[in-house]
Length: 398
Ligand code: CTP
Image (cartoon, rainbow, N blue to C red; front, top):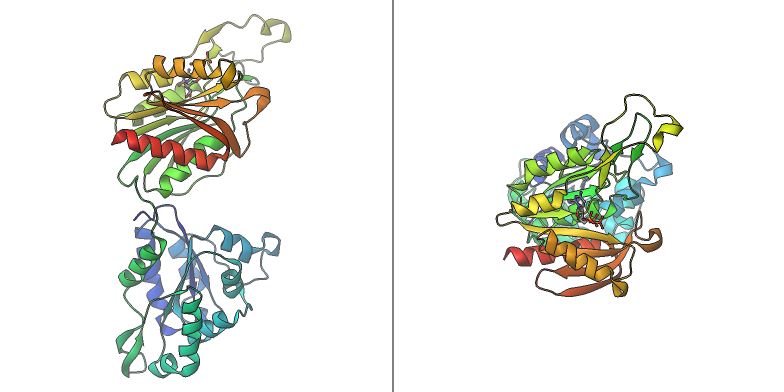
């Protein structure tokens, strides 16, 4: 299963085995999980904030009343793909069973719809106490995954059930719970996003309205499916995606250089960027006067996609065609022509008439493959389109 790029909340409650969760955090990171730790106040008696911050590389919030404007319990809950409570004390089990929300962790639990995995660790009597047994039953009936404590030596010196399990046991429980599509594991997906800009002088440039959203949606979808992703991003304001390699470029030649350097070892190239077709023959060192602007000589940029696809070995190559002609009025024919001329496996005909699509979260168009199939796409999210393109590319890879 792929775990790269998945967000996990690790809730740590006040039991002596809290120190073992330091190892769990490390092993989760080894699997590529991105981990936000929420320690309860009691747990800080065992492992402090500094340790969690150093190990997770993230700021640690313990209190509902810090950064209130960000509504931390809701924002953390929303991005979590799973919540693990390890160790889970009898106290947190009771709170969870009754829906009590009196700190950041318990509020996050209530605000989240992600799968929850608890790792109870406590003294045998507490584990077997009818109150705990009943709370565990309640949690199980609500779909909470319980990783049973092991039997062995306990901190008190007694021997019995209640021991914190090995990190590997907890992680295999998590992987099973998350069971997600990892069909791109072992594949390298190279994606271009945004729009290239060609400097005219220190002030002006030739550019376009591409926001980079579609390219970033592709990168995100691919990393969640297990791919190694290299994203060549031109002038996009989209937030970084952890777990992928992002190469930032400005101009077409920089984009070409970055793509050429990565193409040979890629399995799939998806060229979602809008490339400036022309550039000034020379970049003026000083600001060009108004009157001289009309004299700027433009020269064509290389067609990056065509050049890369002409040297492809087994790669699947997908392009985009942003057209202002509607599909029915010749737009589709132009896209098919581009697919042929650039030697592509597929092209997404993107209807951008009237400035539609740019900067939006939804897209409409037609996905065309080299074997002539045309799949109409109507008002879907850019993530949905991303997954359709990846399905198609994977299918072509065989
Ligand atoms: N493309 C490219 N290099 C260029 C121009 C375009 O790699 N210099 C890529 C785009 O990223 C896109 C595809 O080619 O995936 C189609 O781009 P588009 O601009 O629609 O096609 P052009 O061939 O430039 O045709 P035209 O501008 O004449 O419509």
